[in-house]
Length: 489
Image (tube, rainbow, N blue to C red; front, side, top):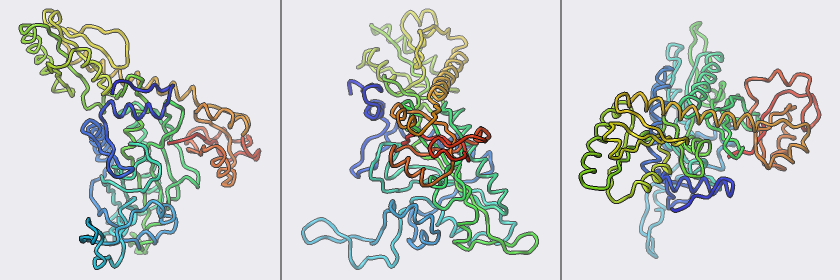
């Protein structure tokens, strides 16, 4: 691939070009599904490993539940089945047979007594199992996380952001009291928010969803909303307080310390491979992918430069020294390929999003130093071999800081206020988060979505006191909330 469409020319095509140029994924023979190539899966692996560490720190353990769920399970919680019914893939037979005209077809004799759903999410199967595991208050809390794939049959797809099959983690917890469950849901929201800020360099807005946007079957859905470079929103993670809805649907009760039977209180929470899409759309540029150091599969690439065989030998020997000095602390790649010129190597690694490139030529060998080029831009500079690891650490910290600064500044500049619904419609095409006083009204919310394709992203957790005494920007009625409206992926 020779060129990448610029963001200004066509933002959607730019995104697809960045994916292709960086070698993150490819299209599958099944529409809406994607193949995660090694570089793309390595980014997800780093996300997964860091979240796993944070989950362990908050007392959670990993388990695994089946991919196939009886259809009847989804029918037990009314809101849940309504929310997912149109996205479910259903298994009706358990084997194939040769077809008369060639190929294969489902064997009619293998029709299942009860169809099975390929999991769109796991609340139903997990709460069926919790009903067998929970008897007493001594069995609580249960704090389980699952790493898995799910299938939600999407009509319009975009790699990483919205696909038919995707990878994710889903936490499912059971508690003795409402207060414990609500505290858990808020705690996990903060885990996601701090992860986005500190690991991905993405500033996020923490908030609660409106009734029409909350998870099917939840009492409250908390969200972290990130702003992409075009001003659109991306729901980067959610945490749900489920109340007792699933416990009642599956009759999951426990004997309390006072001897009474009570229904269990629940949460669920998750992030998915759309986090990779968030990284790309938040940080990348017209050159290609730009990865925060924490999720860069290659944090430092060494590019030795030589002209003669003698220079090659000494340059590679010194490059090996540098790699050894960095290898214990960083993910380092030594690009010693003969077939590519230095410029072609620089081009390739810039497109793959490597945060730091260290160039090593004969003069650098003689001076026992390296020449550093940071992916976020700026002049190249020399680093002496002595202390190279600390200098690299400082450079990578600088990349994270700069990426976060850019994203935070963009969010401030594009968080907009409007005086009327008409002004909102006029300015919406330019993108942005519209922070407005809002009277909670499902009919008005549906009208705005229909007319503008904008939705309430959340009611921010901070700043709700500002709504007092104001009137709704759309209906003119007394405001009940401050709300963020935006178009979203």
